[in-house]
Amino acid sequence: MNVQTKPAEDAAAIVAELGRRAREAAVALRNASTETKNRALADAARLIRAEKASILAANAKDVGAAKAAGMTTALQDRLLLNDARVEGMAKGLDDITALPDPVGAEIENWTRPNGLSISRVRVPIGIIGVIYEARPNVTADAGALCVKSGNVVVLRGGSDSFHSSRAIVELLRRALKDAGLPEDCVQLVPTTDRAAVGEMLRATGWLDLIVPRGGRSLIDRVTEESRVPVLRHYDGICHVYVDRDADIAMATDVVANAKMRRVSVCGAAETLLVDRAALDTHLLPVLSKLHELGCEVRGDSEVRKRDPRATPATEKDWRTEYLAPVISVATVDGVDGAIRHIATFGSQHTESIITGNEATARRFLAEVDSAIVMHNASTQFADGGEFGLGAEIGISTNRMHARGPVGLVELTTYKNVVRGKGTTRP
Image (cartoon, rainbow, N blue to C red; front, side):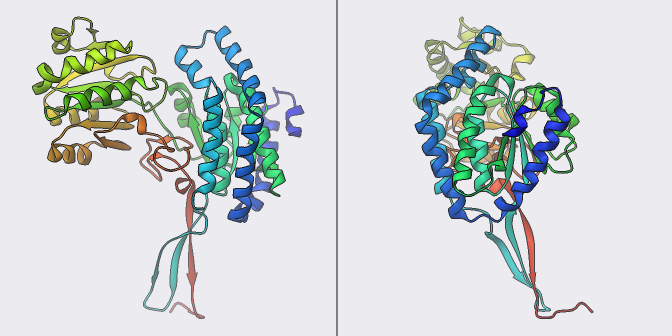
C-alpha cells in the first residue's frame, strides 16, 4: 500500500487517501460476481494457511510488546495467535465462502392495484470502517465478511495488534488482486496515530458505517464523536440464571463452560443468578466446579452463607465485565427476579436460563430484552461462527438495523426496485 509511506502524523492526508481508494474500489466490488468474490476468499484462506509462520512471527512482535507494556492477561489472550487460531481464521474464510451471497437476493415483492411491481433487493451498505483493539482475528473476519457482502472495508486495528493485522491484510489484498478485484477492497490504516480514528469518525463524505470493537473507552469515544452511523457493541455483561427446576448436573456444566471456556470473550458469563428456591440444592455444586477451575466467586450475603470461599460482592460487581476468571453471584426471587436483575444491570448482550420448566423458559426468552437469549445453553455460543454465519464483524447491542452477531446479511441494506408498463401517476 503506497499510503504506508506517508508520515504517521499526517492523519488527515492518510485517511483522505484511504477514502479515495475505497470509493474507487467500491464500484468494482459492488458489481462483482459471487464466483469472483468466492475465488478471492478461498485463495485468502489458502494463503493464511501457507503463510502461517509469517503471521505468527508478526504476532509474536505484538505479544512481546504487549507483555512489556503490562497488558492484562485477558487482553493478551485476545491478542495471541497460535496454530489453532490461525487455522480458525482460515476456516472462517472457508465457511464464509460456502455461505449464500446475500447481494441481489429479493427480500419481498408485491404488486399494486395500478400494476406497479415493487420488490426489495439486498445491496451492500457501501464502505465500512472497523475500529478494533487487540483481536487480530477481527482483521480476517471483517475483511472476508465485507468482501463477500460487497462492502469495501477500512480497518483500523489497535497499535497492540498492528504487525499481526498488517500481515493478514497483505494476504487478503494479494488474494483480491489474483481474483481480479481491487486490492483496495480491504485496507488497513497504516499508522498507529490515534488522530486517524478521529479522521475516520468525521469521514461522512465516504464512510457509510463505523463498527467499533473494543473496550468501553473506545466504544464511548466512537459513539460520542462519530458523525458516521455506528453499529456498536457495548459491554458483554452476560448472565446465566439457574432456576429451581434446573437439572443440577446441567447447570454445573453450563455455568462452568459459560464462565471458564474462554474468559476474555464478550460472550463469557459475568454474573450468575440463582433462584432463592434453589440455593440449598444447586448453589454449592455449581460454585464448587467454578472454584475447581480457578474462578474467583463474589457473592451476596445468601451466597456467602453457603460458600465460605466467596468474597463479598458490591453493586459495582453486577455492572462489571471482568474478562477474567471472576464471577459475581446474586440470589433472585425466581424468574421474575432474574428478569428484573438483568434489566437493571445488564448490557443487553447475552443471557441464558437453565431450567427444565418450559413455561418458565418461555417467560425468560420473551421478557428478557437482550440481543441474544438462550435456554439450557452456554453464553459462549454468542458467536457468529456458532450461529452458522461463518464469522462475525461483531455482536451488535443496537436496536436499529441489526442485533446479535453481525454476519453477511446484516452487512447489507436494500433498495426498492419498481417495474411498470408505462405507468403514470394521476
